[in-house]
Image (cartoon, rainbow, N blue to C red):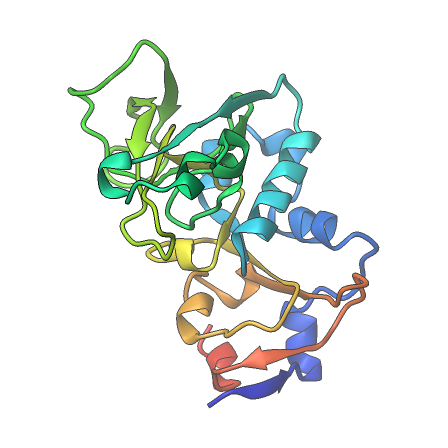
Length: 248
């Protein structure tokens, strides 16, 4: 049942961020306090994340964090093409430019341009076989979760296609299968268990119980809701009972 969730006074004090001029900066400071001192601390990074409702908002927050951090930023563009073996020959498809293909966004594919600095936390979007397919240019990464924590891995560029697509052609993207993970979409947070979660809502979104279960305790959850003018809100579209807060 879809309802309008109004955050009560006690919940506001416990969870809601309402005092801010810049909402993105506010959610970053709440979720990653003392970031400039801790940005290379694996234990600090592995225990927290911001969750957003869309890929575009997650990218915006990730780019914002990268600008705050010291060090040189490097940009890695993808090479995008069409699988002509699965595409009906057509003058329309022949006219698709690289710029157009680069602009296409798919939830299970990396960005066309990946921006990184040394120490940036990333999430793998594909399983890797470390003994096959390595090229001359890889990203060196250190595992900071799971049973292999601390292991060094090398991530190559891969040719990736979406498993399902509504487009009349099959896109092939050659890119590193990663995404920056200071912020991730709510869907990408599945399986995560974190000490600190910042839920960043810029528009009505379904908040199911599983989203709140990402955080281990009530103290670790902060919610920021704002309208198009960046003014704080206390309500959002909801499909969960208020009692979910009491379970934290």
